[in-house]
Amino acid sequence: ELPWGGTIEHGESVEAFSSSTVDCGEECASETRHCSYGELDGQYTNETCTEVCHDCDAETLSWSAHGCQAWFPPTTHGESVTRSNEETGRTGEATYQCDDGDWVYQSSTCSGASCDLPWGGSIDHGQSVTAYQSSSVACGEGCVSELRSCSYGNLTGSYTNQSCTEICQSCSTETLSWGADGCEATFGAAAHGEVHTEQNTTSGRIGEATYSCHDGSWNFNSGTCGGAPCDLPWGGTIDHGESVTAYPSESTDCEEFCPSEVRECSFGQLLGDPDYDHQSCSVEVGTTCPDGSLYAGYLNGNHYYTLENDQGEYTWNRGVMTWIETYANSHTDGQANTSLLAGLTDAASPYYAALACHDLDEHGHSDWFLPAREELYMLWENRDAIGNFNDRGDPYFDAYWSSTESDAAAAHTLYFDIGQDVVQTKNAPFFVRCIRR
Image (cartoon, rainbow, N blue to C red):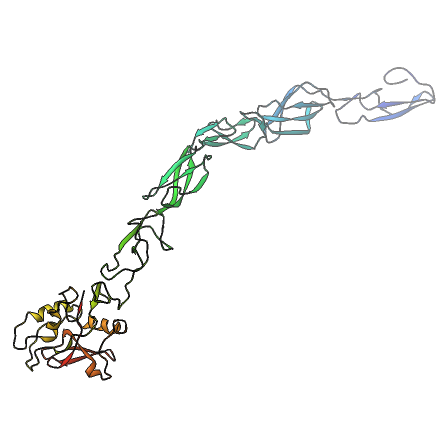
């Protein structure tokens, strides 16, 4: 007979268990019992053994450091359940298995949720995007922006525009002026920020300017401007503001003295009489003028004339050894020296050499005078062109008086054969050649 009822025949066997139930996860202990001549060996008394496992109750479970969680329903022992995250700002899922009433973690994913962008699209958790306060601003104001970050589905910040445009106007074609001298040029249409350089187009000016277009207005950057140079009638140019002496002809007769005028360059125009179109004008030394006198040369701003012959030999004073200082000591103005000497009435007067010229009335002129020291030297330099100077081969006998006094006893002479200035006593006779201007 079997412990749980019923029988088996002699020689048969049956499996028996130590207990009818065991805890979940434990194994049932069993043995095989044999029937021999009415005796059943062994000792286990239970026909069956059942592992007793509990089911899992519904529960909200959490996973991951990001804080995902979900509700898991009642589940039978041994079954696995996968649920999606239900926590705001997270995304993911987890799989749990029911084990004897306990939920056992198996696998999962969990991360911050992406964020929707105000202008469309999205960014992932942890990413950032630049947003702008407004979609456009006036020229020069500058766009205001902020960095918006995605954190668990929440986009920080408040600006809602993906881009921002600075609205700047283009510049239209315009004629612009620069510089005190009045340069100008036409600048063609340009976009904001463009830089244009143009050459001056105003007559009589030269230069260039650089302007930049800023929100519809032309702004001056840099420029040069000045008066244009002037072409000279005889070739070449002079700059604006410069002057040149011009003559009506290249040569003239003695009486006109080569008239001239100063012609100034002003903004590309050469001012003055256009008939004055020669660079130079000259009278050849030694030329016989219409009145019969000879052109002697040009010195210290004066034109000089002389006679075709000497006046003769004269002493500087009246030929006496009476030494009186006259103060006729100009080295450049023989006319002043001569006038002074002609008016003296001292013990050494009359002053014959000076009077020989002062009292002369020749070729319709009465303004002749004894040359001063520098004027006499001019005659020596031009002696070949003038002609008829004494040249006897002896310096002493070829000397000419000047009207320039050296001291009370002497005055300056010039040896015409060698061009040497020598001081001689006033009572010595030497040659006189008169001049006028």
